[in-house]
Image (tube, rainbow, N blue to C red; front, side, top):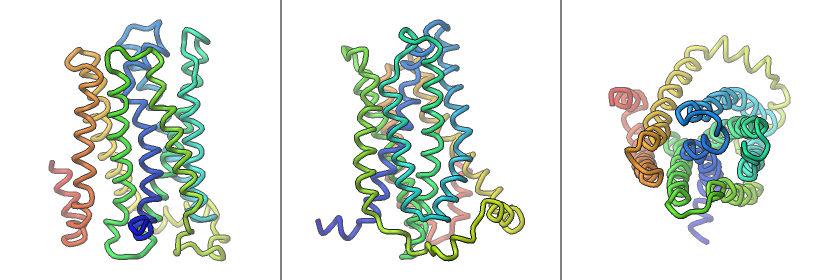
Length: 303
């Protein structure tokens, strides 16, 4: 109990990040199985491309979700934004877990899957950005370390997603076992939602100043005063995203589809990869605080 009280904010933030990224990553780790269930009339390669196509379409909602939830966090408080993001993710993930497949409702199955994915994309953007900003706004100690806890929770969630999907992909598991990660993630999200309802508002949030914020004013300020910084953040984020999804999640689908590894073996390897990353995150945050963020980023790009 004493440990929880001392690290209450970190635990609350990480719990939501773990829950949401477990759900988000399960889709990609189960891509070969989802291709069979939602696109059975296509050949395996085309079906897999269709599954990734739904992911790509839904991923376009992340910038929109980031802006909407970022505005909600600035205007109405981080607490509300973080609670809403977990709630929407829980609803979307439950939807995927109970979705009928192509054999039951035909074309409606992938369409409903796309809707759930769009909701997931918007929610995960709201979760990740607000969680990182919330931690930095606490204003205690190393801001790099504070912001890294949201990423740490996300990486732990991805690693857990890989492990759970590895278990449900073992030989002998029932045909419906692919639903387990999504239904389990719904439980973890509801638990995170319960915890989030007890979070205190960010000390940096000022209700009086927030009333003056409008979307137009925010966009104008970004365009006029921070356009260089915004472009740099977008490019860094894009590079990191491509590295993660290509080198970890897409890799799993590729090696499974081409028979190099079984689904379980590939997912275990992916979980080890993410495990190394979430161990390294706090260490890199401490290093960035000592030598600066720029040398860290240059080393990352070089690798």
